[in-house]
Length: 150
Image 1 (cartoon, rainbow, N blue to C red):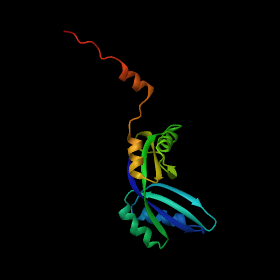
Image 2 (cartoon, rainbow, N blue to C red):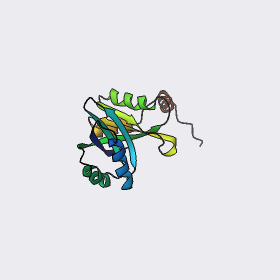
Image 3 (cartoon, rainbow, N blue to C red):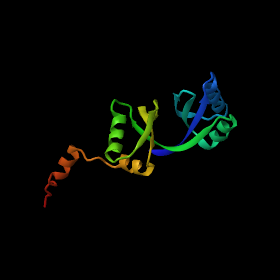
Image 4 (cartoon, helix red, strand yellow):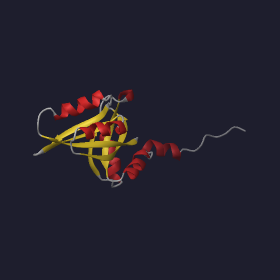
């Protein structure tokens, strides 16, 4: 789990904008780790994570497209049904505000990575990394230690 810089680019509604951005990052040998595109009435919002934000920043600024940067939390998860719900429920139980989330596919070891925009990144990291006590854990703790031979 780590924080990453997310770039949000505000694209005019004309063909080729997304292709231009991706092509320029490709020419600069910058890998796109995750992206999502949403449309609004007057513009689209492209959110992306680059493998090297410091290298991506000047490339994106050179395109003269309005952009903002924000820190997001990236969480490796099992690529299985309910994995995102598990993280969301933990955050919700601790009253961590979630603005949005999107996921990648094909992460290392058959995992997926969730990208979470949360109100309090430090609190979210603490909540997610805390070991959850399950009923099985509680049963193990309640057992008596094995008798020792003398």
